[in-house]
Length: 200
Image (cartoon, rainbow, N blue to C red; front, side):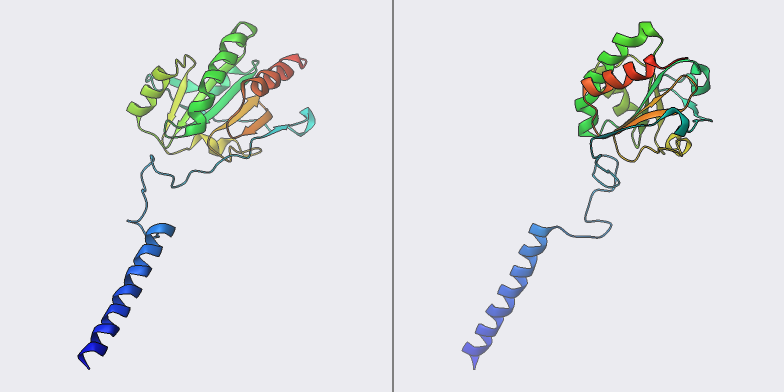
């Protein structure tokens, strides 16, 4: 009788250990089971690396984009009406954002003389980590600090659906193109050239 109870106990212990191991391998759910801060993966959506070009007749205007830059200065996108504008949504916690930073900066430097403006929109981030990101990647164009991701709400026609997302506006302030995910240097270069080639 005692031997039988020991065997049953061993079976129960083995079953419990098996379940615990399965949970450890497959992950778990619940508020305390995953990281909920901006440095975790919660809320992060990977882009599909697609570029959409919108015909001029189908473009929607972007209005009401204002905010505060990381250096504390006010920002109003409408001041750049008449320019081709590149808007990049990013976060310092985002691996693809880190990978694309150098290419974005290079296209900015190559096209600033043609009147092309760049602005970054830093989302779900802290000011300190965002500033470190800009220094580390030598980013020189202005960046709006938008921890609540409110700026994205103004891009109703073609919303930024992933992090990162890059949107190119034509001279009329309309969305001409959107790239979902990490944008290669050559893709951004070609989209900016195409937008510049359009009649003012």
